[in-house]
Image 1: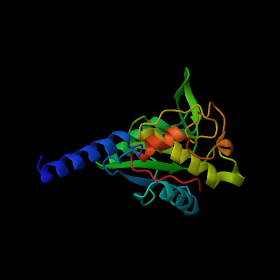
Image 2: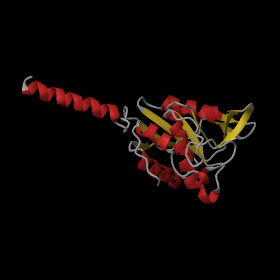
Image 3: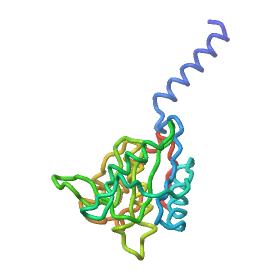
Image 4: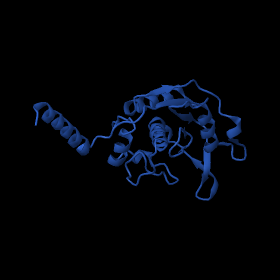
Length: 203
């Protein structure tokens, strides 16, 4: 067999072997995450979330603050419907982007047979928009808790469901606030997000 043919076959064989045994997920099309502050959330809180997300996902931007849409207001409970806020954000989200709204107002959704269930955040799985609220956070740890809820809801938009691992950012809150027990994404959730272009750090 000619020397040139042998070389070509060897290169092809090596390529196939490397591809078959690769354990590193390949990133898909780049998505830009837009932080959308609503009037009332502080600039310091927005900056904290931005810095935390930037360590884990490189393509982040911050929009100018806007007013909460009156169409999402639920007067009976003096709160805002999270699903309506997401629909509002979706209508403003460009192709190739995902938007996370940040607010200090009380938000709610329909859950477990309860028509108006108060939540810390909500994100469709998958989707292009989500929302996080500081209303139910511990004042002393508000920044860290906002970051954890924000990264959790963004995980949903990228396609991650709730996770049974208690320290994972994707665990289900189950009506409480377990954010102080959450430390990072578990190995399985990390692998999934890295395939979507995430970097991921513990900090």
